[in-house]
Amino acid sequence: MPTMRYMPNVVTLELDGAKCNGCRMCIEVCPQAVFAYEDKRAVIVDRDACMECGACAMNCPEGAIVVSAGVGCAAAVLNGMLRGTDPNCDCSDKSACCG
Image 1 (cartoon, rainbow, N blue to C red):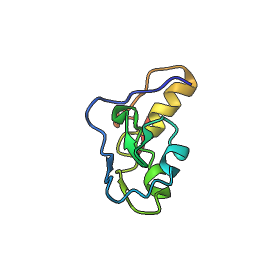
Image 2 (spheres, one colour):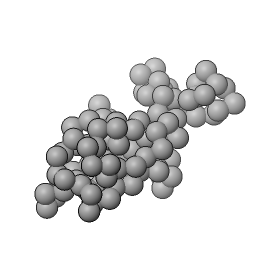
Image 3 (cartoon, one colour):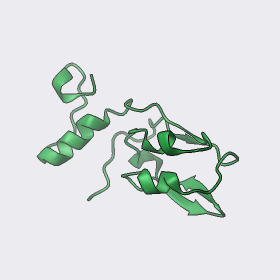
Image 4 (cartoon, rainbow, N blue to C red):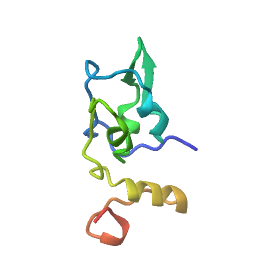
């Protein structure tokens, strides 16, 4: 599956490396390969690939990850990919967005 991009430099994803226990759960659940494992901790390697689904934050036992899930209109991005169309995050059309 190709890596999708939403919009550069707008992702709300934050990782507190000091809180990370190295469990690798974020790496396991991230559908976009945003995280990697370096020096016994998770690191963000591709922030702009994040679609803000929130899976990493929900599965982090230490609360080291914060993301405003849904802000990136992940549903519209995924629907566009599945339909073979461009992502539509024009929130004036609520059927095509996260509203």
